[in-house]
Length: 119
Image 1 (cartoon, rainbow, N blue to C red):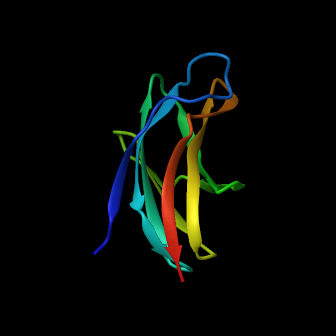
Image 2: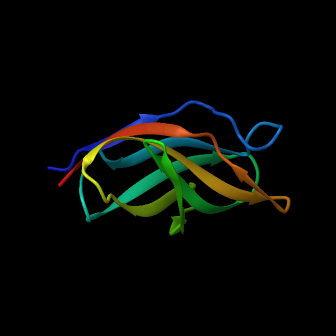
């Protein structure tokens, strides 16, 4: 049985001097993964203006960031990205997205979650 987790997240620090235009509200993924298998990470964001979300980034227990192109952005701002874990261990993963607004690239708030990668 797959364990699905929903993480309700708080606001964080962004690259801009003003409030972030993109805020991650929720992240869904398997909390138990296996080395070498592909897993979907679904990220729900709230936007205050029309922006272009380009990448989802992951920092795996301090390693990274590893950024991947966004595969799907639905009208309700549901983002889907696939990831593959390479080493078995427990990770604390920070997740954020990059977006374009007014010709500049910004980062959303960061959200932390825990994942256990098995061999």
